[in-house]
Length: 113
Image (cartoon, rainbow, N blue to C red; front, side, top):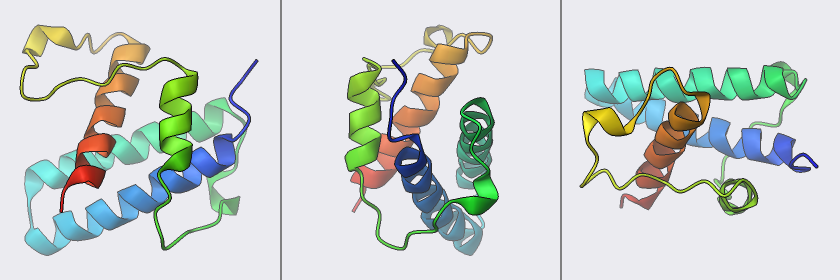
């Protein structure tokens, strides 16, 4: 049974992307910009895989992380600990590892003050 709140999930991710990308551009931080691109590509792929037209999603101003946490829980995704991660922990040829890597970034981004 697929996750039934995929549109809400994508809207949440897109809101995080917009916020983070704006900050990256303001700071002219290349690393942040690359992470933004990674998040955006993940959003587009997830939307296509779930037959969701990204142009039709609601752009939300307030980030509600409930869909993010529900998705992570529903799919039993264990986020990385970036304080302990090694280069060989992420297999770039493994879709699940890449998803886990992107979602970990989103988690860390939303936990910053």
